Amino acid sequence: MSLIKEGRGYWKYEQKENHTRFLTRYDYDTRFGKAGKLLDTIFRPLMGWATAWSFAALKQWLETGKRPEDSLRQSLLHVLFCVTLALLWAYQG
Image (cartoon, rainbow, N blue to C red; front, side):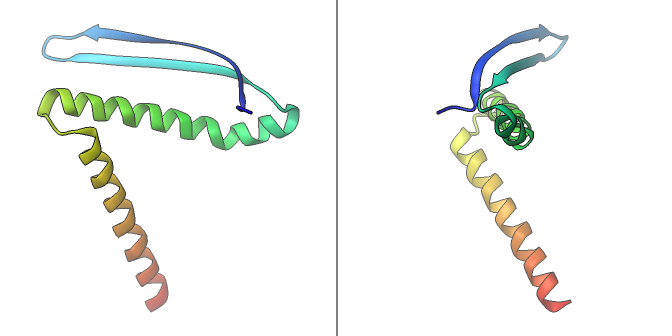
C-alpha cells in the first residue's frame, strides 16, 4: 500500500570545531505508475521536511533538553496562530 517501492539512503555525521553537523539523504522509487509519480510531487517534499524537522528536534533535545513533544506542540501552535491571523486579515479585508 505504500507509495515507496524501494528506498536507499545514508546518515553522515561531520565533527566540526564546536558542533556536529548531521547530513541525511534518502531516495526511493515509487509504485502506481504515473499516479504514483504525481503523488510523489507532494509526498517527497513533505517527507524531506519531516525528516529534517525530526532531526532538528532531536538535536534540540540533546543540546538544550527541550523534548520533541514540546517542539511539536510549539510548532503546531505557531501554525495555528499564523492561520488564525491570516483568516482574520482576509475576513477584515
